[in-house]
Amino acid sequence: MAVLVLIPTPLQKFTADEASAEVEASSVNGLLQALEARYPGILGRLCDEGGKLRRFLNVYVNSEDIRFLQNQETPLQDGDEVSIVPAVAGG
Amino acid sequence: MTATLSCSTFTGLRCKECGHPYGAGAKHVCEDVCFGPLEVVYDYDVIKSRVTRATIEAGPVSIWRYREFLPIEGDPIDVGTGFTPLLKANRLAKRLGLKNLYIKNDGVNMPTLSFKDRVVSVALTRARELGFTTVSCASTGNLANSTAAIAAHAGLDCCVFIPSDLELGKVLGTLIYNPTLMAVKGNYDQVNRLCSEVANTYGWGFVNINLRPYYSEGSKTLGYEVIEQLGWQLPDHIVAPLASGSLFTKIRKGFDEFIKVGLVDEKPVRFSGAQAEGCSPIAQAFAEGRDFITPVKPNTIAKSIAIGNPADGPYAIDIANRTGGTIAAVNDDEIVAGIQLLAETEGVFTETAGGTTIAVLKKLVEQGKIDPSETTVAYITGNGLKTLEAVTAAVGEPLTIEPQLASFNAAWERAQSLHRAGKEPQA
Image (cartoon, rainbow over all chains, first blue to last red):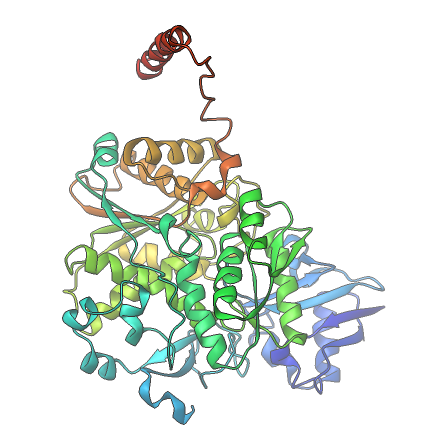
């Protein structure tokens, strides 16, 4: 299942400056592994040692925060768009 | 680090989580290690050697009297931002059962009547220094007003993003400065995500994204001013609204810095935060003893503080816990009542965020969490004229009369009886 991943600027050094990537994955966890397979080293930035997404990273599937879905277990379908966004302050 | 920083007091950026150092560019996350937020690093020995109470008092009547504590290199964009009134709120204090209550009134901040003018003045000064010609932001309204206005003054191009359901005053109060205004069909958290994606590909200075380390420092001036206006003393307790949590942490940083350089004597200050029940992820986490935030989808009239995924939430919880403060939430009816209470007792018309703060202040007093004799400062961060919708149903209507004395007499009689009925306990 092909999903489109939007890569934030700080991670584009792993993707040869590409702002998006198409990968095969059936869940967010699978997507993280697929990214690592294609861009070695990126997983260590995205997740802590325990494989948990870092506290200051937000991940969205089709604009929905995965914390409103099934977190890293969230299933993915063909054509889904996944966005990785570092947390920002605002107001 | 660049040589041009030699006359400034800051030396670069550093990750607040892991301490990894970065240069003083347009960058807000720890991209080499952990994605934690970056903070400005200062040389406090240099600041201490340059600043005294007297040098500050001799400075401009704006946030720039504290410029040694702010991350800029050259001349600031000074639109008169800051040094807003600190009112001794005796009538409100009496109503609540307090003795030493102050209102820090940023509803009359310049140029756009909210505390956001502080952060934007700093962010756009730095944006200009870093060579940006277009500035932008994701906003719940006040930040859009401020970014558009100060960009106009500075001659910077401006494109700002807001949720499409904002109050009319906030929308018009941005459009008047003629920026490009994007009204996004979604809530603030969705606007913020979109802006992060835009920031990836457009070379703009987003005040609350890639300029965030500089932007957020502007809020420290709300700490400095209260110290100076209290006669160079710290208060005992502060109450402030919580949206992202950034303001709360920066007031604390402001207090700590003045202690560090010897401008004020150290003493404990309790920090209490206010949220609207319809968007209270920080208050919920605090109540449940969690140190992490579970995001929520906002549903409250307090749109200016409706951030469901607050980036600085964990830091706000930590400060409330460490200082013996609390974080509480109030419902929309209480927020409107808070707006009315502040207006009727002190002549200060605040927006929904201020109503939230006053309502939480009242709640904390009722719960015995504020000692009546404590010097307490409530931070009012925005102006009620921008959110008229929130109070329209509550304030009633004028008495419409004919231009004749008899008509007035009859109406006055009626007004008096209505007034008495309103003051007396209902049977």
